[in-house]
Amino acid sequence: MAVREDEIERPDGSRGVYGVVDKPDFALVVPMERGGFHLVEEYRYPLGRRTWNFPQGSAPGRAAVPPAELARRELAEETGLRADALTELGRLDSSHGTTGQGVTVFLATGLRAGAHDREPEEQEMRQCWITRAEFKRMIRDGRITDDSTVAAYALLLLHEEEGGV
Image (tube, rainbow, N blue to C red):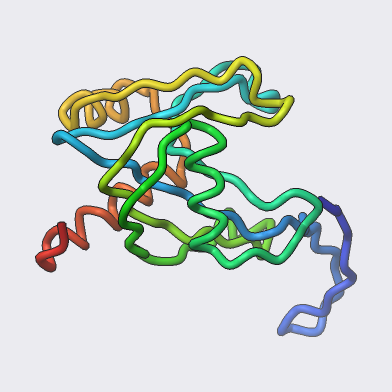
């Protein structure tokens, strides 16, 4: 990650400074089976608390990794799950007022269990499977506040409306 301040000129000609956070793109995976989802929970330092979300992450060292490969890697790393099928649901801009970082969202199905391989920062990570009804309750009552997770769910709903599995 890099933080910079760019000197800008606004449309009216006035000058200013715009703060930008440069972060690599990431992948987010919606692991779905049996009418529900697998979620992970971990401590988020900037929030000072633990939060639930879909598995997600970027490649170490800002490496350029194709989004589908990154999605498979993050799913296995954080949950131990492997997916027989990975369907791209869409791409979103993450905090577009602050960064150019994007997220590619995938639906993972045909899940098989395996061993996870979490990074040192993820040592306290937990995972669970929940029903779709519980997922919606968790959003409503503030247990899921991750904007990428909620936006990924919206992409899944659109996919399902269009006849996707």
